[in-house]
Image: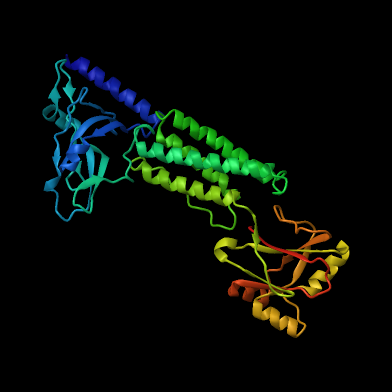
Length: 406
């Protein structure tokens, strides 16, 4: 081929690469890679196949068109080395005339090499391809958490496995929320935020399923979808700190996608966790009830509600319950009863919190909030226990204690 013709092809290739990078700046990495597992067990790193695009737009298809690199003897690595990363390395244009082998058509077959992070990469176009760690037996094996830069979800099986787990979790959470909304006793049937959350989860689930069915799509598109889902779920987080969302890192997509997927799973757990948790009360002796306030179960910032039911008119119950019922830490309640003092203040609320249980039995029920002010309330939380005293004179008494998440 004449030099003008070769220059014309080179110019056309540069234009195509510039156009491709404008449309997708992460158009480099692995399309498919295959390693010799048996050789690795024997201490040799041998590449059996590689289809990839380098940052400069150079294509590699080995052994179909280009040459495979020679195997690497891992026994030559330092004995104390616990981890090593190998890069696909392509000689830069200045070196290709001498380094690459000509094919029968007069072109060049690219000679990709495997360089470790211990070697110099000067004069090469490189990207990380494999990370090895030394096992307890002293044999190098692939680091399972490492994902090379990939052109598609299919190009990195670990990414696809992460996606499959997330889709399953998302579908399960959406199903649980939908079932709860259909339950008339849950208090979420007409809850607009719950319906909006279900819409968000359903839309994201459909998009992520699309990526599962079409794994040839680029992982950056998957990251963008997860990022949008994480941002949409932020308003549904209760009492927690807004997470710092990671940035896409194409050189190590597995790390950022794993981190973002973990954030989404935690957000889903927090978003559809039951807001109203029953707190079991035990009658220790006539008129005295006790319950444990487990911070891990109740959660930070939870509000305590007490449902009081009795066989009397509701206005009368609403008036006398805050005066007769004493709540607080066990020692404080004993003192309040002995000296006729008030306990933690009970404030009547006009309606039950969403999902609150109704005490079984005949009669009326009133709901009271335990006001989160004063030394008695703080001492009750510090003690990790609540005691409730109700004197005789309230027929058919029924009590339900619950914690409502913020």
